[in-house]
Amino acid sequence: MTINRRDFLKIAGISAVLGFGEFTAYELLRPGELFAKTPAPPKGTAAAPPQDAGLRALTANRWAMAVDARKFNSPEDVQKCSDACKRTHNVPTFDDARRDVNWLRTATFDQTFPGLTDDRITDALIKKPYAALCNHCGDPPCVRACPTGATFKRKDGIVAMDYHRCIGCRMCMAACPYGARSFNFSDPREHIKEFNREFPTRTKGVVEKCTFCSERLQKGLLPACVEASGGAVTVGDIADPKSEISTLLAANYSIRRRLELGTEPGVYYIIAPDTVNPAENSTPNFDKNSTRNSDGKSRKENVVAPRREERKNSDGKSKKGGK
Image: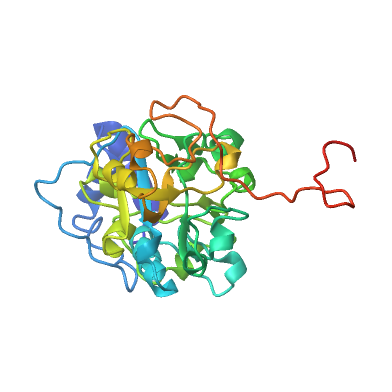
């Protein structure tokens, strides 16, 4: 659709004199052209899915996720979740791994839980692949670091992003201890394999990350990774002791990433059934290594942290104090 200078002045004049909007004035001069020549969607664009009738928005006081590590046996199991995430949110795939963008990636045990020691962590668990993503922390350091408010925490616990306010300073990336954010060094639209017209794309110079599929929750749908996991990933309201995720965590032993930092991550990794002392787990909202009660107030407990070597004297006895 093109327009020359003369037609432009005519449209402006008609709009000003008669009080028409610019669309109405254009239709008077060139009827049928304004919307008839809307460009076709890019090749590979997914058709808009039909609206799910009768579904209500999924809500929670505090959203959380439980990843059952016992059900992820190969990198392909995690990759299925990652691929579903990429298709749903137009996440680009770059050939250069250093510039690749991932909302959910496959990681080793040491990458996911650096320095973590726990009696229930077996060799088999250490060899498994893990799904690493934004933890939607209760006390997110990325929110404090963002100078423009592009990253913010919602009342339901989801750490969200406003891409239009992101200036690409990457302060949030430096503050995140989980490496859960990616930066677009080039135009991501050129590296999207299959477009989803229901979700916006990003631009060069913008940071992006997992959104907990908040747009799907609003439609009454579960996150894409949950649907693709085949029951290995569960989401729900951890503030509700009767919710599915609370019941699941009450019956199983879970760990979280880098609890010693005090960020209160909202992603739990189930590694074993809770058979040692089920009575201690009567309040299912938080695992035993949590630093907060279910009401969110701090409490003193041993936090699973990197093991430190004990300093000893030459006679083999422990050394107290001194240098």
